[in-house]
Image 1 (cartoon, rainbow, N blue to C red):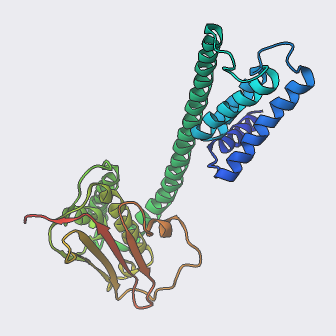
Image 2 (cartoon, rainbow, N blue to C red):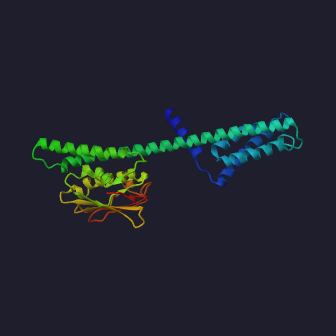
Image 3 (cartoon, rainbow, N blue to C red):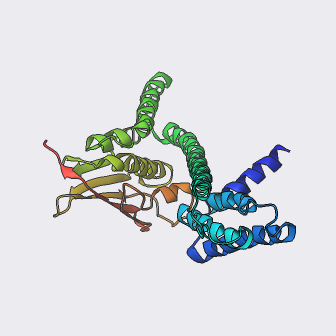
Length: 324
């Protein structure tokens, strides 16, 4: 029962949220106009009065399924058709106070229906957007939880080089604390301004216990919307490096560099892995690979699975140099 309700809700949301082009919208308008006209003609031609009565439900449907401009056009055309066929002629063939009042009531009623339908349509679209966003967050959360567990295992097996269990515990605890701080960086608001090298250093700190991530670049400020995407991308690159790449072997290291282009606003970030295992392109693209793709905040990403070492170049717009 609950599954059927959820399925109906999904279908209704898809029907209402669908963006229709002009030909499809015109087809809907035609069908919604012909249906009440045929129904009214079969029941009553004019004797009962109220020529627009059968068109109100169709006007509501048009307001829900179509853009506002099409719903308004539908109301106007339906008013003309219903009055001509079932109302005994044009609206103002004879102008009287009663006809003027009726017309104003009709316009008010039609306007309220269109406004209510448009409001419901916007609400359903917003609910759909929030649901899709929540599903994306949940999918990314599941991915990051799996990554985190694998990463903790990699840190335990490859990380601390201690001579006693107590020393191992202390060093491993420090690395876990660093990993927790790096994860907390992902909670920065989308409007927070990031600063290099601070942001990069804090993000990769738990992966860099032996100084094998070598950073170089001038201090700079990131645009508001680029901090989170860059954190996520660097976190994903570092996670993969310690699981499969250059940081998974003692002799491997990573070069992380950045610079601002000649225009003064384009930031280039380059991640290069050296002396790691031979790199093989992934068989399929998972969520981690999709995180290393162009997205809002990172205009371009080039990911290259060079057998000698993976490298990734990112381009961000809107950065600026910062005072040292």
